[in-house]
Image (cartoon, rainbow, N blue to C red; front, side, top):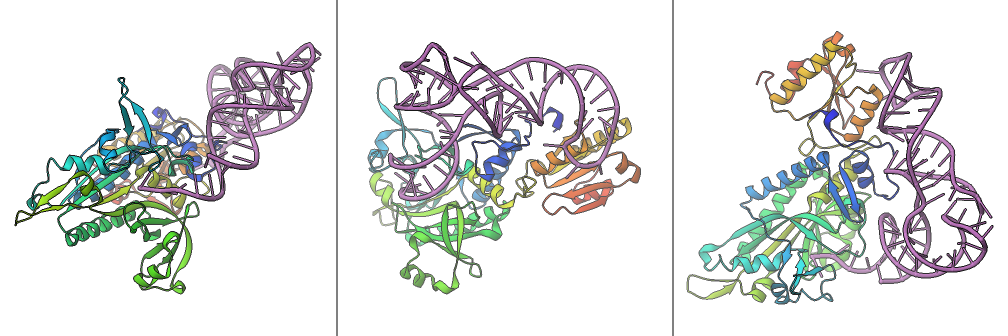
Length: 421
RNA sequence: CGGGGUGUAGCAUAAUGGUAGUGUACGCGGUUUGGGACCGUGUGGCCCGGGUUCGAUUCCCGGCUCCCCGACCA
């Protein structure tokens, strides 16, 4: 994409109504727009990152045999009344609305109830199990206090997967499969080295669950980490009993601030019992389905990546989720030979399948470099009169600042593509 | 939901009981051109409602907004 055509603009100053680093940088760089507290729109660059994160998650869910669907934001109270979760005293984050005829409706804050009821149409026999079904769907949560930029919002897309098993053993297998898939996701978005499977409270579902917690100063939780074993314990369940279960002592653990980027729950038969989701075994006996639920919020993940990897000059995106792979920064565009070369390089890279943001604006070099640092694309390729005279492209790695002089052929080879592809 | 702040131009900010200045952004002219350059010039603003007052952006009351701390976080 030509940057001269990008409608968003970078800002020098952070907005006064944002304190969090993620919101400040994402707004300054033109990735997101704040509609109101806890409600953000995604602009072209931000949507690209968001979609790339979604693609990583989708890929891992599919590899784990997840089947993608889309449920609805509008929710039928009846199915929630069946589990006791329609009551505002039980669930205080409901956004509720009504039909013209006065019938109440809810805006979904999660989807255990509707998917459990829906699966009754499709699961009847042990032969129908196991199953894993997921979606990317907008959740609405009437949080009393939205905060920390995109980390805790009132409207957000969540990837929620639900597993259905015929036995505890089968459930445990699915649970472990999802745990591995989650670890793959966090590694691919660049947080693998600082994200830990964390023993946590099960909330209303069960006694315990697992959270994936990324160690960051922006975190809202306190966890105790054992890096060698790659495990952690949330402060809320930091008890002697849990320590003993996990085979660690307080001396093995260090306290860290962390942000939750994923959560996996064993639901048991809580929902299948309440809503009548059951199957017949080989003997014809009826049993409730054993369920699990597994959530990741792509926007929150984007926020945690921002908090974790950005530096004083701006955003720093890992290659797999960056809005573009290459930021082609062309200087001296008033020189028609330089412009022709830059245009040609842009066309060739794009044709070869490399995602390029081409800064073809006629503005000063300083502004271009500052914008490039702020936007945070992994590789900056500089084209200028000087570069043209020397015959070698200047390639700067955003994360490290490393500068390399490459020929065009070497640049293409670097991306594993052929120049004349 | 408890507590503390906040609200002035697109953005960031200053001052002020007599309707507001600066930076940036934007328009125009000119000089510049590898780290947000400079000169000139122009456009553009006091959250909403009520009260006090000759007069309110300023003081008072109420509301709303946004931020932060705590609680909550399915």
